[in-house]
Image (cartoon, rainbow, N blue to C red; front, side, top):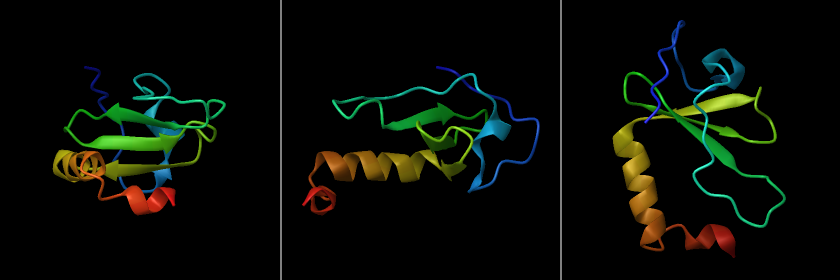
Length: 84
Protein backbone atom coordinates (compact mmCIF):
# COMPACT_ATOMS: atom_id res chain seq x y z
CA UNK A 1 0.00 0.00 0.00
CA UNK A 2 1.44 3.34 -0.99
CA UNK A 3 1.45 6.04 1.65
CA UNK A 4 2.40 9.47 0.45
CA UNK A 5 3.89 11.78 3.07
CA UNK A 6 2.69 15.25 2.16
CA UNK A 7 5.17 18.11 2.41
CA UNK A 8 2.36 20.63 2.79
CA UNK A 9 -0.91 20.81 4.73
CA UNK A 10 -3.53 18.60 3.10
CA UNK A 11 -7.04 20.00 2.79
CA UNK A 12 -10.24 19.16 0.93
CA UNK A 13 -10.30 20.74 -2.53
CA UNK A 14 -6.57 21.36 -2.75
CA UNK A 15 -4.94 21.05 -6.17
CA UNK A 16 -4.22 17.33 -6.64
CA UNK A 17 -0.86 18.14 -8.24
CA UNK A 18 0.33 19.35 -4.82
CA UNK A 19 0.07 15.75 -3.59
CA UNK A 20 2.52 14.63 -6.28
CA UNK A 21 2.17 12.30 -9.21
CA UNK A 22 3.30 9.07 -7.51
CA UNK A 23 0.93 6.84 -5.56
CA UNK A 24 -2.31 7.46 -7.46
CA UNK A 25 -4.24 4.30 -8.40
CA UNK A 26 -7.33 3.60 -10.47
CA UNK A 27 -9.21 1.21 -8.17
CA UNK A 28 -11.44 0.17 -11.04
CA UNK A 29 -11.85 1.10 -14.66
CA UNK A 30 -14.63 0.25 -17.01
CA UNK A 31 -15.45 0.81 -20.63
CA UNK A 32 -15.67 4.56 -20.20
CA UNK A 33 -12.64 5.53 -22.28
CA UNK A 34 -10.38 5.97 -19.26
CA UNK A 35 -12.61 8.52 -17.51
CA UNK A 36 -12.51 7.36 -13.93
CA UNK A 37 -11.38 8.37 -10.51
CA UNK A 38 -7.97 7.84 -8.99
CA UNK A 39 -7.28 7.38 -5.29
CA UNK A 40 -4.23 7.74 -3.09
CA UNK A 41 -3.72 6.65 0.51
CA UNK A 42 -2.10 9.50 2.45
CA UNK A 43 0.47 9.09 5.22
CA UNK A 44 -2.10 9.98 7.90
CA UNK A 45 -4.52 7.31 6.65
CA UNK A 46 -6.90 9.61 4.79
CA UNK A 47 -7.74 8.99 1.14
CA UNK A 48 -7.37 11.53 -1.64
CA UNK A 49 -9.57 11.18 -4.74
CA UNK A 50 -9.21 12.99 -8.07
CA UNK A 51 -10.68 12.82 -11.56
CA UNK A 52 -8.29 10.95 -13.87
CA UNK A 53 -8.95 13.32 -16.77
CA UNK A 54 -8.08 16.34 -14.61
CA UNK A 55 -5.06 15.28 -12.53
CA UNK A 56 -4.27 18.91 -11.67
CA UNK A 57 -7.83 19.62 -10.52
CA UNK A 58 -9.12 19.45 -6.95
CA UNK A 59 -8.48 16.51 -4.66
CA UNK A 60 -11.27 15.46 -2.37
CA UNK A 61 -9.95 14.20 0.96
CA UNK A 62 -11.85 11.54 2.92
CA UNK A 63 -11.25 9.75 6.20
CA UNK A 64 -11.10 5.97 6.13
CA UNK A 65 -14.47 5.89 7.94
CA UNK A 66 -16.05 8.09 5.26
CA UNK A 67 -14.62 5.98 2.44
CA UNK A 68 -15.67 2.75 4.16
CA UNK A 69 -19.23 4.04 4.57
CA UNK A 70 -19.38 5.07 0.91
CA UNK A 71 -18.03 1.77 -0.43
CA UNK A 72 -20.23 -0.35 1.84
CA UNK A 73 -23.26 1.76 0.95
CA UNK A 74 -22.53 1.49 -2.77
CA UNK A 75 -22.17 -2.28 -2.47
CA UNK A 76 -25.52 -2.41 -0.68
CA UNK A 77 -27.20 -0.43 -3.47
CA UNK A 78 -27.69 2.79 -1.51
CA UNK A 79 -26.11 4.84 -4.33
CA UNK A 80 -28.04 3.18 -7.17
CA UNK A 81 -30.14 6.34 -7.57
CA UNK A 82 -27.03 7.98 -9.07
CA UNK A 83 -27.24 5.63 -12.05
CA UNK A 84 -30.83 6.28 -13.06
